[in-house]
Length: 261
Image (tube, rainbow, N blue to C red):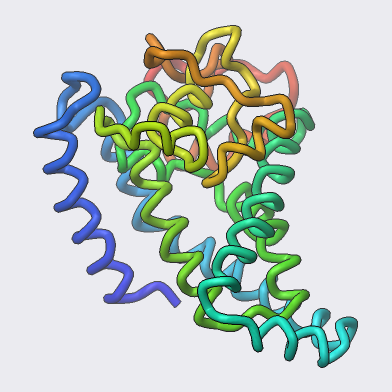
């Protein structure tokens, strides 16, 4: 459950990434850029909602897995070395993430939820928290489904979750730090910034959360030797937390929100 430990994690993340973005910025944007207060609300409130939603869905996944999957399968999986389990969890979970993420881009109803995340116009570590709770809950449930079904150890899942949380901050950050040729294997700011780019060639590209080769296999990889010029969406997504929560349910043809709302 969300509590003091989460707050400490957020403070540590802020202290680290604020320094990284100040000393190694990709763009010379303001520390307190537009809509930063709104994204701070996402950070503080979404954690509670998402953890409650995930707790319920994961409990259901575990119960269903125990009923449907032979005990011998889980025992065999957990008998593997921890390092191998972590690699397998990464492969399975990121494949699920890729498929769910791609669905949120291609199914119009789901896109309304995911458009909130793409309404980010100035990328930084804090912007990574701007995501609709239902988007996050559904995507992570699909991602974790094969992991819990096969009975991977708690330690391997914990390591994966820790890796995913920190990498999500890195790939959204306003940082020019690169990872060299490893960018073709692991998601980097360059890879994910292109996912957020508001340029025709970059639309619906780079869906993987961590493993770039999934987009190569899926024919959705796009990473030219430059960074995007602009981010965001052409559709008028509101810029206030309460309106963003209700935006996916707005009837088609309803009046667009006023600028800055």
